[in-house]
Amino acid sequence: MVAAGLLLTAVMPAWAQKVSHELPYEELQRFARVFAAVKNNYVEPVSSQELIASAIKGMVNDLDPHSSFLDENEFEEMKESTDGEFGGLGIEIGAEQGLVKIIAPIEDTPAAKAGIMPGDLIIKINGESTEGKPLNDVIKQLRGEPGSEIVLTVKRSSSAEPLDIKIVRDIIQIRSVRSKRLPDDIGYVRISQFQERTGADLAQHLTDLGKGKPLKGLVLDLRNDPGGLLNAAIGVSAAFIEPNKLVVSTKAREQEMQRYLAVPSEYAPDESDYLKNLPDWTRKVPLVVLINVGSASASEIVAGALQDYQRATIMGNRSFGKGSVQVVMPLDDNTGIKLTTARYYTPLGRSIQATGIEPDIIVSDTKTGDLFSFPREADLSDHLNNDQVPAAGVKGKVNTDKAIEMLKEPEEMFEFGSGEDFQLQQAINHLTGKKVDQGVITKEKPKGLSKEEMEAVKPSGSNDGSAAGDKSAEKQSK
Image (cartoon, rainbow, N blue to C red; front, side, top):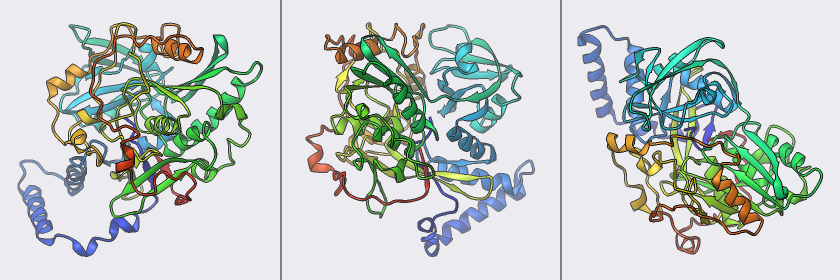
């Protein structure tokens, strides 16, 4: 998934250098001896660059699922993903216990049109096995010239035999916001990812939806939205809440709580205020936000803020539970590290790390039960703990067989926003005063704390929406 809370810095920040006088020389000498032993005695020659890169990867990758070393290709891919345009198939992939897993196909891309589904495991690319391959090598194979053909062999839990899926590469231009007017004067807006233009695009969609007969309600669909840029999440939240309200807070080690408010300097620091001409109805219209297990990071920031202010009814399933902030630190012009540096908190001070956002109204994916069951944050190896609910964030290793079992997906997938979308129909029912059918709910013990319980645990100063936050000019993303 796209990591939440990335702070893209131009140089290694001063706080990351302050421990230089505390370097553990004995351990570094041990590292140097290992380096020399491998360099001089390994059965085949290994370059110093390869050894150092592998050492950095091992140092960072074992911290938590979202910290990693970014080589040249990964560094470029991260920049492209936030810009919203890149070449390839249109899939988000991840690695879990050595498996190459499809997190989600991006809507209206070659992968989605070819039938790639969340949870598919890529076992071969053009007949070549992916077993044991680093994720970066897999990405290199997936990318190519627009118009060129690639064959993915995927393992799907609903199919006894692997499936060969032919896809033609293309330039991927992601439209992160879609909208339409539904019957009964209900507006529908879907955000598939939080990118540079998401906030501005949302403002335009809302303006267009409001033309003509006034809307009686609005559905904001964040299902299977893996996150994106933090300033985009602030902008989306600001479209529905009053200006100057607190949207999210972050707390890093040995630092004061940093607050991000619904103000232009936070969501549009490099451009004009794209919300200044937004119609007044957007902050008053009855609102339902749809979330599910695939709603992560920026999606959870928005859902958490709108829930805390009782601005929206949150409906669907418990979200992914990624409540951590990553900083991207360039090491040189072409590489960097992505490092988890903080946790984020909702306006009422709730940490959702490894717990997720609990819906106000639980509704199953379909009338007959849930379809999506891929692992949440709490199921990932060595995930960061929740400082408010430690038991919900105990680190551990995921059993591979269990992880594969959790990747089961539906044999027949519906399209979000379509007439077959059960959760959307229940959101419309709620907005029009009709009875909500919750479907078949899987009994699941909530892992988070209630709003009332937050009074005893919320971080100091995190609940005052009028307080001035740190107006950092750094570009922020998740």
